[in-house]
Image 1 (cartoon, rainbow, N blue to C red):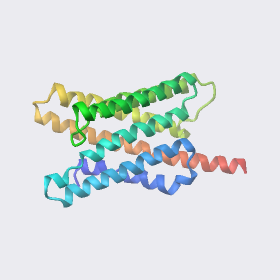
Image 2: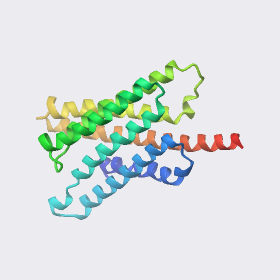
Image 3: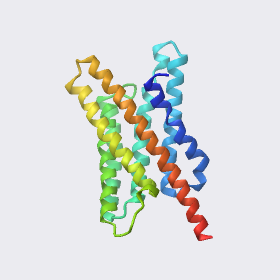
Length: 223
């Protein structure tokens, strides 16, 4: 199994945690659970088509990832809407969600048809997810309450999103504009992206595990 395949299929691990622990997860974490489950389904379908179909048209799976990019934005936007406390931030998230959905539709109609790689939508998502994470960290730093970060599932999620999306944005920028003609650097950046994706999957796994564990402990305390 090559690195790219391993990276894409690694999402199955947190998806299994999400399915097993779904009923024990807090409401906010269920958005992350759905994200990992949908991602696992998309990646399993994509890998199946690549391995068992010969015709290039039949092997095409970019449309699934275009749909996933939109679903991912909606799920993470709603997750952080519930997590962030300030009313102004919540209004910003609502506005961004509407603007993103409009942009995604316009992008498909005018620039990147549904059967082509929707890099514009992915870039907007990368930037937005970095912003969501920074807003959470800002909320965390301004809080007067003590936080054990190792037991904070949103911390693990935000750290993973910040690390992956900041690096992915730089890699996409490099491969699209700066080093487009250099094939060696292009393949190297793809390998780096696969590694960062593995790291993000690890953060998803830890985040869901901690969320399920914390919720179970809170239930014991309440009893």
